[in-house]
Amino acid sequence: MVMEGTLIVITGPTGVGKTATAIEVARRLGCEIISADSRQIFKEIPIGTAAPTAEEQHLVRHHFVAIKSITEYYSAAQFEQEAIDLLPRLFNSSPSRCAVMCGGSMMYVDAVCHGIDAMPTISTEVREHVMRLYKDCGIEAIVAQLELLDPDYLKIADPNNHKRLLHALEVCYQAGRPYTELRTGASKPRPFKIVKIGLNMPREELFGRINRRVDAMVAAGLEQEARSVYPLRHLNALNTVGFKEMFAYFDGTMDWNTAVERIKKNTRVYAKQQLRWFAKDPEVTWLTPDADTSSQILEYAAPARNIVL
Image 1 (cartoon, helix red, strand yellow):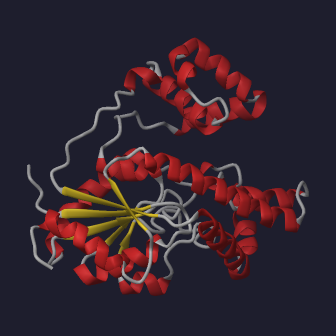
Image 2 (cartoon, one colour; image 1 turned 45 degrees about the vertical axis):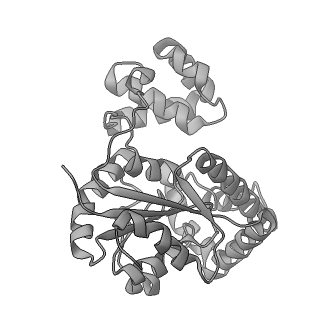
């Protein structure tokens, strides 16, 4: 099936200005925005995730922002299916037959553009069992189980990425098969056009923006937001920069100034991880955000839409 439309993807590192650019592009095209951010989906933590403000969402309708509770399970596979199902309506409702997808969650962007391997939905029982094993016995117990159930995955896994190791074991338990047997890496054809734009800027400037944004989050009430979800700190949705450091401060293992500086440092580290990931994608056209960025993006999108600007 051919789905006539163009998805304009605006991605890049955290803090680079993706939201503002996406809003300007969407307004000029008369279309709506899909948020590709794995944490902005959760409604309890808008400050810590730098979610689009009410004013920004009034300018352009955003989808997949504040639609789930942190207590609900959500995955890149679910996002892929729901975003793909939504796109025909977005294309049909836009005079330009476009939609904008904005975000820096690498797996979410790839899920929509290329698809991800079909994985079983992890039951609450399996998820809780793996988490109990991890909490009671440490990551060593997770690795020991993977050595039995999927030794091939351990050969390629990052031993420091505990979240991925836990997920691999969850899949092994749920599917009754090794995780690596389900990882094909095959790209799914998409029945619509895709234009990928990456935003980036000199490292010193980007890091300065990140530091200032963390200060703005603190001023906006990040501590109060973190305290409101502190009793649920064990949830995966809160295993993220900003909240982990605030929780350490609440626990007394980190003082206030150290916590804030650590949020800045860890956000900068995450930005570098994002850039390394997206640098592997030859389909991304990189731009430096400025006053003319939206016009440049429209020029890149014009051939895909077969129009003259």
